[in-house]
Amino acid sequence: MKNTTYINNKFIDHNKAKISVDDRGFLFADSVYELINVSNKKIIDLDQHLNRLKVSLRKVKIKYKLNKKKYEEIINKLIKLNKIFNGYIYIQITRGVAERKHEFPNKYSPTTIIFTKHLKINKKIYEKGVKIITIPDIRWLRRDIKTTSLLPNVLSKQLAVEKNAFESWLIDDGNITEGSASNAWIIKNSNTIVTHPANNKILKGVTRDTIIKILKKNGFNIKEKPFNLIEAKNAKEAFLTSSTLSVLPVVKIDNYNISKGKPGDITKKIINLYNNYISKNKTLLSRELKIA
Ligand SMILES: Cc1ncc(COP(=O)(O)O)c(C=O)c1O
Image (tube, rainbow, N blue to C red):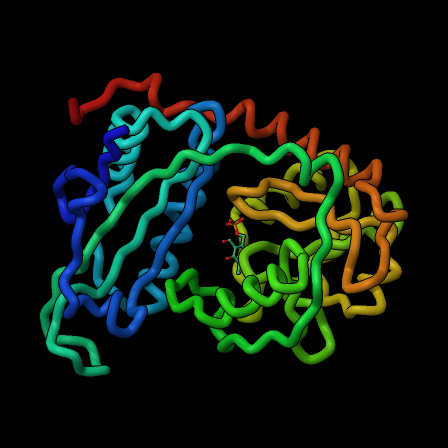
């Protein structure tokens, strides 16, 4: 099936979309990105993702005018053309093409890439929960920036796969920061839910923010504070969140079973609350498109 990708103001066949070998995104990972979930044609938390993209651009000092209206139109068009029902939208902006020197070029024209992907939901992992391993957090100290500089995350995830686990939770200074591609949560008792504070040590997940809002609204006590491995292993329940995974139960941490190795009732309730929220998101497709 034909797959269309947006690259620098053009919509082209995904297989023909190319960037220069001199692109700083390729040479230095001098680039930022976003990944946005599409569920039943609904684009989840688009505004929050575009806001975070703006923040990332500002933090890495890429000069870029991000026009939200234009982005909505591009995304809408891609979703329509590529017939995305469940999947994701990937956006990457690099500092563009320049002679290979570490310092920023005096003048540059950022590269913009937006593509979509179909995703099949693996129901089993939600029914059974997943195992995670814990390993040292070897990343830099600006994890708040959503940069494509992801080699430590790649290596951490690979280690999990090699140990038949789903994800790695990363330990920095004795505390669990987050997963290689997700935020980490523990439930201490039926009402207290703990996740790492949103500082330079983690990516402030859009799903994390939404879950915090939903849970507060539903009377849960949210503690944004660091937690260590002992607290995690003694947790009543645990789960992880990300845009593509939503809320996923964690039932084993290293060799310790959590909530008897099965998804717990509170996690199930949170999954339901989040699914309700998702189903209420707007579909952009219903709005009129400027780009035909
Ligand atoms: C390191 C890291 N933390 C957290 C998340 C979750 O963020 P979000 O909920 O915005 O997808 C991701 C998602 O890719 C991630 O890569």
